[in-house]
Image (cartoon, rainbow, N blue to C red; front, top):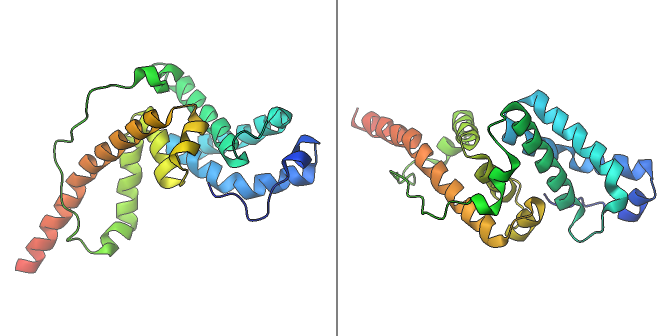
Length: 204
C-alpha cells in the first residue's frame, strides 16, 4: 500500500481527532477492501473486514507505536480480521496454519510450465484473464494467498509484508515463491489452451 500523499498525522489520531481518522479511512479504505475481497472472495465479508479493521484501529490507535508504517499496521489488522473470518466459516483452518512452523520445507515443483510470451499483451489484460487470475489466487492455501496479495498485488516490500503478518523475511520469500509457482502451474492450463487456439486460427 502506498502511503497517502497527504500525510496522516499519527499524533492527531492518538489524540482522538475524528477528522484525521476520517482522512485515514478515506485514504486506506480502497486497499483494505481489495485485500479482504481477494482473501475472502465475498463482497459482504470484505465489507465486514473493512469495517472491523477501522473499528479496531480506532480502538487501539493509542497503542500504535509507529515501529511500522501506518499502512502496514492497518494491513496487519485487516489480515487478522480476514483470517479470523476464514477460521469462523471454516473451522478446519486455524490461525496456526499461517505460522512459520507450518511451512513445508519440501520444494514445490509445478507439474507443467507453459511459455506465455507468444500471447499478445491484450490476452493478459482481458476481463476473462483477470477472472481466471482471481480464481487461481482463491485456490492458493491461505498462508500463501495472503503473502501473494500483499507483496505482488498491493505492492508491499518483503519487509513490510513480514511486518504485517509477523513473519520473517525468509518465510515471506518462501511462501511467495510457492504461491507464484502454484499460480503459474494453474494458469499454464488456461494459457496453454489459448496458445493452442491461436495456433489453430493461424493455420486456418
